[in-house]
Amino acid sequence: MKTFNLVLTIFFSLNFSYTQEINAKIIVNSESINQTNSSVFKNLEISLSNFINNSSWSNVNYSEFEKVDLNVLLSITSYSNNSYVANIEFQASRPVFNSSYSTPIFNYQEKNFQFDYVEYEPIIFKNNQFESKISSLLAFYINIIIGVDHDSFVLNSGNYFYDISKNILNYTNQSNISGWNSSHNGGKLNKFWLIEYLTSNDSNEFSNFLFNYHVNGLDLMHSDILSAKTNIATSISSLKSLKRRNPNSILIKILFDSKSDEIKDIYSGGSFFDVSNLVSDLNYLSPFLSNKWNSIR
Image 1 (tube, rainbow, N blue to C red):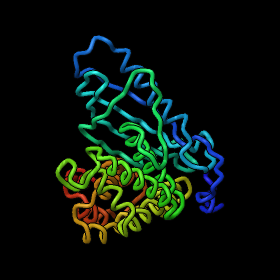
Image 2: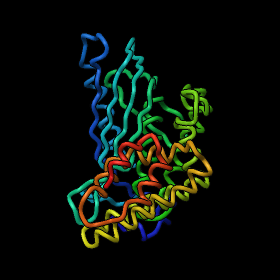
Image 3: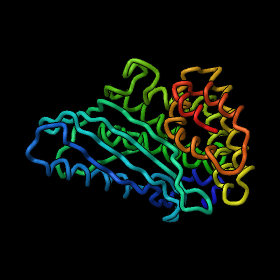
Image 4: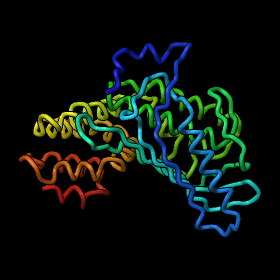
């Protein structure tokens, strides 16, 4: 697996040796609009794929097996004269040690995203300068996804990438681009608050959860199922302090949007495990999923 303990000083090197970290599959869905020239959407799909898969997002060496698998669904809801409105959904997963299983680490959807794209023009991104709405948005979420992936292997190793995403948000806001401020979509479930909490004290519990759930939980399943289940349950319980401090935390929402089905599957069958405390914790942390939690036996 990734040897991050060669420590994260490499992150701060000024002379990077980059490799691709993302294995992305992009789908552009234009079925909801009436447009006879479908080639523009296919070329958009190709441009997005080239931008994500052929860009280097860090200086950590990833083997093919270790790459983050990312599915991006861009559903076009409006199109006119190179201007688009779309819903975009990210689903990312990382491999589990000693298995063929990939675990979801980030599921998130942003609605009514507005951007411009001229057919055949490349998508360009620069770290400290706004280039386009689509490159800023993709780079923002990809750095978060890589940060989450890193946190799931080494404690607090995602902070570097969260800081990059915060920088993208800051300079995009300075360019007066809509959709990046704190009130976007009328609440705290937007990208402003997502990165605000990822770069605050709330990120400590988030990172601890990611590390313990994956390294001390899923990655241990191949050798000690009972210990793995115990550690996963403990990691879930540790989120209660974050819930008490921030009852509507977007971080908790993202975790359970990504992990709820997996958690249910882990504790439904197999070796005996007393799930009473776990179910109580899950109902406290994510009461809207109570039907799912209460089906765990």
